[in-house]
Image (cartoon, rainbow, N blue to C red; front, side, top):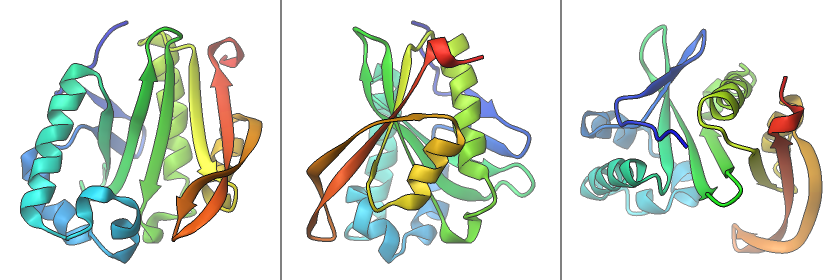
Length: 182
């Protein structure tokens, strides 16, 4: 499998998807709010040094292909609208688990489906991935809608499989296979 380089960028008509660098720390730090703190472990203390450490660890992990943690920028003004990342790569079957997050002000503008569609093309054609997995809590209808809009198939619901806001919740597992990509 071809590995990404830290300098690689993936572009769509409206977006740039890239691995963050230390120069992004100030902008990312300014974006941390209660919603982010709830889901992003490294932002819990809203500590700038911790954010810098996270970016440095991200760069190392991306180089080792342990994960691929990217920021999404708008081409029009270079603003960060947040993140998309691979949290698990299963080398034996060339499967990737994809997660995404976007600021509320950018909801309903189709940015995440645009990223997912670009990733499908890139991963299936350039990186020879066989399967992409998206997992969302059953109640997270916005994330589930992204998967459905991008033609992922709902494979199953796993009951009581995650804790969100101190509550046990179900997870919805979606997959898209290379053989279904046209």
